[in-house]
Image (cartoon, rainbow over all chains, first blue to last red; front, side):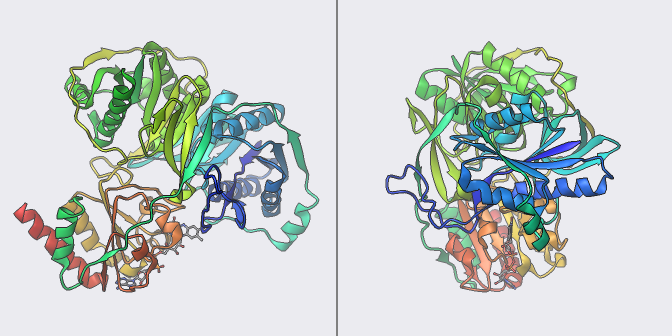
Length: 249
Length: 324
Ligand SMILES: Cc1cc2nc3c(=O)[nH]c(=O)nc-3n(C[C@H](O)[C@H](O)[C@H](O)COP(=O)(O)OP(=O)(O)OC[C@H]3O[C@@H](n4cnc5c(N)ncnc54)[C@H](O)[C@@H]3O)c2cc1C
């Protein structure tokens, strides 16, 4: 079996977001880019599966859709342990375009298991995995919190409202993964960083896809009013304020 | 033309979140001079279905097929796709929750209909069609313009509210057709608690952090939550330590919630934690450290020892409820 992990290149969570002068885009200067945290856990799980299933998983590939600037993130994924990488060379306009480009890539290079994170921490869309599965015409399972491969069969757990379900899926399929898929993301070892340089990173031209939406502008949220500190000796007052002023109870 | 809203039926009942979605759809329908059709999958009584009419659904479609008992993303997508064409829907609204996140992207790709995921407003303009959503974990709002004939929106819970708009609603049963490629997945077992307030949908959430000192101190949190009809949650280290179940972990790497009222008890307010709760309408923090970052995002705060403040908070809520 082959696993593909779709990687999104996102600003580190602690980044302060600034807008360009015309508010049409985010000012990317000074941003530190990282592998989207969910994708990093997905990659970690893919590598764990490869190591523990006695050869059932022959290869773990990572792919991203983006221009040359995102390559350090892909190299990091290789350093963590992915075998090879693809970058589809286009600056995508929306999640649909990312999914459509990945579809082109996957049609030319098929995989059995495709892993996507539940959302990317930039546009918080939760969209690429499902769109990709649909465009490929394969099954998808969302909110996956555990994934194993037993005798060539994929077993999953997904988190549902108020509980969880264990399930199986036909192959190939897309798992959209969340908390629990792996406990801690792997960090690249020194050796990993060295070998990553020699691993194949193929740049593929765009498949000529279109987007369905665009971002017409950004706004920063209104600054929050200062916290109203209530005297700890008068907790009743807090409840009164929540009722009378905030009107939330 | 119509606005189609997919509302979840839980054990035969619609919850507040379903009615919020209908209210939201009714607002779009009013602005665009059309009507709301609600779609529900699973067994449900006519009486319960007609409740969607209170919030503006002039038609409620019910699909009751045993194969749809468990969610299969592709099969559910097929059902909604058929309802879209049946009702000539121009806008499809779903909740940005477990089911909506599973289906909406597939539907978007199938219909080539632009998706606005996790929207927080009604359209700010209809021509072009633009809606705001949070991006960068709440640090910026983006205006998403949808350029396709059909638009799909998933709405963040608690971002529109309930607005009654009673209409008489027609109830219709629908028998969808399925294709070979539907049902690629199979559920083997389900382990589900029913009757508990869902963390992702709760109006009020009482959350504890490492400042609670240990799992033995969660009794008062449960009690306060019980009094307020709230769900409980926790910070990541609390789940990592095993003090509470992982399902309660909120934040960047846990659940993202948007209650009307969030209590952060003994939580420092690290940016990764705040990423999961910043959409709360009102945040109340109790922390012994006046410099704790949680106070910069909180609306109300008490500086003090949570072990001392919490019992007083419980008494104050009891007194408030007795007088209400
Ligand atoms: C990649 C990454 C992802 C992360 N994701 C998440 C996430 O999803 N969710 C999350 O929560 N964290 C996440 N974290 C961890 C986060 O950075 C913080 O470490 C964590 O939120 C702190 O939890 P806490 O506030 O409970 O504990 P602490 O930081 O230990 O804070 C405890 C607070 O309790 C107060 N306190 C102590 N005793 C008392 C008392 N008796 N009475 C009142 N107050 C008291 C202290 O003043 C302190 O402010 C993530 C970190 C990383 C690096």
